[in-house]
Amino acid sequence: MIFIKTHIKTKRIYCVLFLILAYTSLFAQYQSGIKVENLLKTDSTVIGQKINFSSLFDSEVTISKVIIPPGQSTGWHKHDIHVFAHILQGTLTVDIQGYDTKTYPRNTTFAEVIDAYHNGYNKGNEDVILIAFYLGKKEK
Image (cartoon, rainbow, N blue to C red; front, side, top):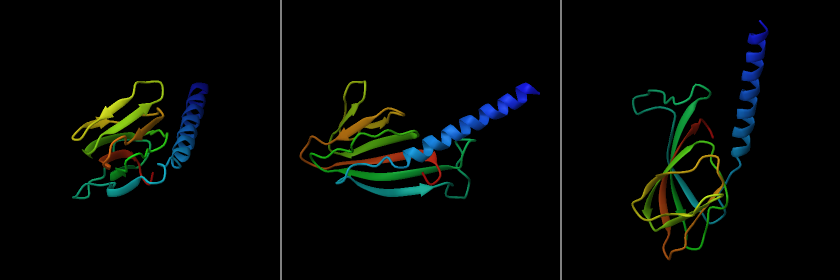
């Protein structure tokens, strides 16, 4: 009986910590000058099937077009969900705290880092345009 009570308390603590983390990450924004156009935000397939990649929360997929003008950066931020990106135009350079700088030229697809601060910037003369796929909690 003591094990069950301890297990329930531990589960509640993890849920509270998860909700705090989710709430604080809501405020992670890119710097001004960066344009983000959501291309898709859905919790179901085209025939109404629910997207479900977590038993902890309602799942949602968002696909956005992100435009980073020359000389601009996203600002230091981190993701607590999976984000995948495809570079349509330009070259994106990303500094990752504690790691080497990464460079992603046109037609590169990559999985972004999770829970690691990073800053994407455009050192080129044309806009960096990328499509980002966010897999996370509904309304996040």
